[in-house]
Length: 201
Image: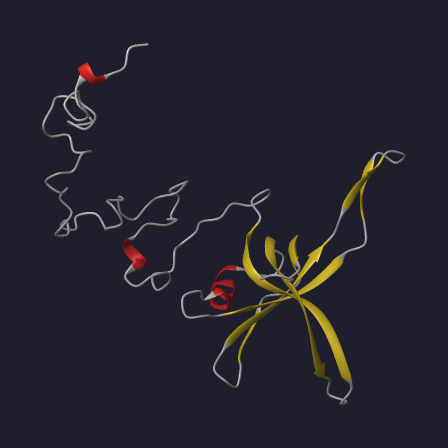
């Protein structure tokens, strides 16, 4: 959205995700990511940690994207993650009745960082378009890469019967019927008056 400030943060979770249900039935997950820069000190010959940034993050479940529930099922304290989202500022009252403001990261995407970890990904069966569970996706269980759930056949699942009307029209100039070449009869000598009508150069 125009005007939003997008941020990508790489760091470690300081605690397990806190998941709660709001009064209107929404599910939200809250996490804190500690991002600590490291610099090499040439004088000591060692790496040194800089000041840590503690970024508070929130994620919500939606109809087709159960991000909060996925975070609860996938991430735990200490895991190194990559998170992307929008910086938002919200106001609230603390227990003493004081008005306070906080800046947090409203997550759009989050996942484990693979520089020092490995991960197996399982696609949610109830996400995406209706009946989308058989349309492919990342498969876990050590497949080691992208494993589609079905081969692509013009947007239909594998094994589905072809839809009516998928045959080319009888006068389709791009069909391969009518001549031996791959472009059919389109553009042959008889289409535009024949070779005898070509101007001499």
